[in-house]
Amino acid sequence: MTKLTITNFLFLCMNLLLLGCGSLTEDQLLSVEMYGVSKSPEGATGTQDPNFQTYQLLKIDIVSEDGATSSNLFDSEEEKIFRIVDREQLIYSKKIAELEGTSYSSIQLTFAPDVIGGDSEDKSLTMTLSNPVLTLSQAFTVEKAKDLTLLIKINWGNTLTDEAMTEPQYVLSLD
Image (tube, rainbow, N blue to C red; front, side, top):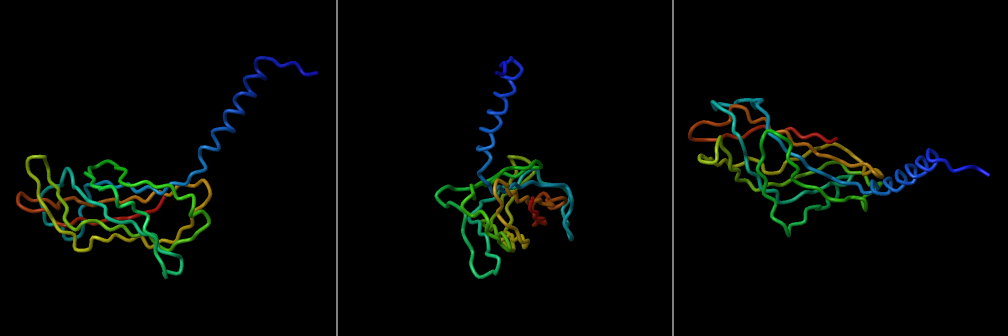
């Protein structure tokens, strides 16, 4: 008969606790994060960087591996307006466990074309996106217990003048 010492008891409790925590990580999440950086896009003619830009997310589609169909993941019941600054901002998150084992060719995000931005609350400027659909054309598969994070880096350096804001460059990556 084995004696249950305090050390063995604590070891047993820790193992049970860790086993229980494992079941909490079964949900896969698709998250989208956005942030601005001081890097200038090609052709930037401004004299300063914005401190913020405000975007409205309208739709998120994932495109099937063969490109024939797309699935809209966005719940349009909630308005998704985000103020983007120079730190990563979570703009969207959804459980995607039901998509486990499915492969996709790309992710498309559709934004409202009008963007508000500026260098302070007092002085806001507006620009219109030439293409409000951002696409990451990178194949991916939804894997068990693995989260997907889409990062949108906004190269907005020198896109602001006293009277106007010009369009930045968007760099998308999947982590």
